[in-house]
Length: 294
Image 1: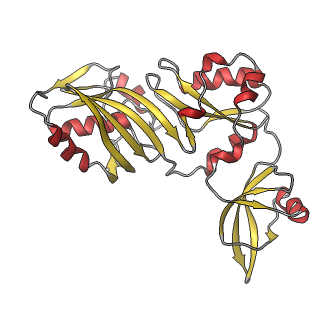
Image 2: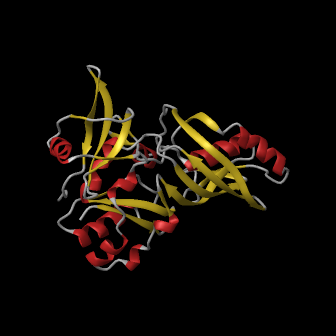
C-alpha cells in the first residue's frame, strides 16, 4: 500500500498521535508525516504510507502552507499562543484597522523570523521547549522564511482573523507575536487551522475518528505522485528497466524534474532530464518503485 492520507487533525492530538493510529491500521507498511502541527492546532496533516515516506528528503523547503489564524491583541504569552501564561499586556483599544494593515505590510514577502522558545528546534542537543520549561531563554538565530500572502479576514474586537500563505518552517505563533510588537500592544495566537499543505487541502482531509481499519485507509488513499508538482514523463520498457535499477537513461525532452511513470501508469520515480556530453538523459533523484514496509 502506497500513498498519502490527509487527516483533518483535531485539537489536543499531536502529529505523532495521528501517525501512531494510522501506523496501527497499516501494519506492516511504513508510515510518517510531512510536517508537524502543534497539539492545539487543527487541519491538514498529510500522512505518508509505504513508498510515499521516501519523499521526505526531497520535499522542497519552500513547500507552501496555508493557515487561518486568530491573532488576539492586547497580551503576549510565554508560548506565543493561548496555551501559555500571559507575560505582557498592552492597550489595544486604539488599534485601528489601518494600523493593522500597515503592520501586516512589513511582514509580507521574504523576512527573517526568530523561532519561539517553545519549539522542538534543537540547540546543543536539547529541544528549545525543554530549556524553556527549565526557565531558560537562549538566543535563537533568525531564519529566512517567505510570507506569500497575509490578509485580514475579519475583526471581532481584539480578535483578528488572518489568512496566511507561507513557506515551510514558518511559525505562525511567532508571526502573531511579532505583529503585536509592531503594533505596540502585544499579541498572541488564539487559534490555528492549517487549510493547505503542499498540494493537499481540507477537501482531501478525513477525520481520524472515521478510520477503523485498513479498508478505511485504502478508501481515502491519495497517490504518492500528488506530493510533487512536476510534469509527467512516460518511459519505454528499456528506460523503465534502467530507472528501476537507478541507471541514467537516454531520452528526449526539456531539462527539468519529472514524475516518471511506466506505460501502465505506475509511478516509478522523481527524475531529472539533464544534458551529459551533448545528449539528454533521465537521471534518478528518488525511486518510488515498490512498497516500503516498516
